[in-house]
Image (spheres, rainbow, N blue to C red):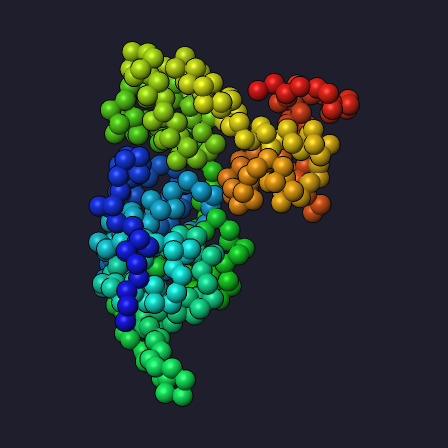
Length: 345
């Protein structure tokens, strides 16, 4: 049996540069994971119970927008359960032999993390059904009339499936996960804890006022907060005295074209297109994505959730529309003809 290509599996030794830096900021223990209080409490109970019974943790399904910690939770589970972590993504699994190659190299108690699990091909899902329930691999040997199926025993393992689109996960697969979690956006208060911890790890000085301001501009997402912290560290190092202050945050965000609401330039371009090109909406997602030169997946998974949460955008059965708050962002009165009014970026 052929194993899958090495590129499909991510290991710690392959991480370099910015990816290694981000990996450094990921907590190894659940107690160090910031935010998501209910999720942490339940997960700790499930892991403790499995460890007491000396059993692998039940299969875990994690849903939520990008950058909120799904991969981090998978690595925490592997660390605390004492199992080997193998991480891959559904798009990297092209053929059944790719998935079979991973499954046959798992050890007792291993953690298999599949990101974007909603993009698994049906043939691969069929393999997972039996592997998740019976810990066996169905494999076909030969072709045509001589073909026969053999079942290869697999060690007890835990599958962690992560997705940004729960509705696109096949129901038979979804129901085979015994533990289901959903990660929501972080509050500014939760992000302050993330930023304080990350600044210590990065050996970066940041004032309390700067932490508070940065937490409000991080889109409710730890990954964004850590990315901005690293960039502001660069600005502080070159343009200031090395300390991230409130003024450094203000100047840095201005250079990065991020406003006080955490909206990036592309966010404002999307809102602008709906207001000026489509008269406030409604407009379909595909049409909107084309008009701003953005992939529809990025529009739906990254930009829209935050703008909807912040009250700038609405999804309706007929399409996307902006709210009064979006007009106010550009100093536009929604009751007036605004075709010739400029945007304030």
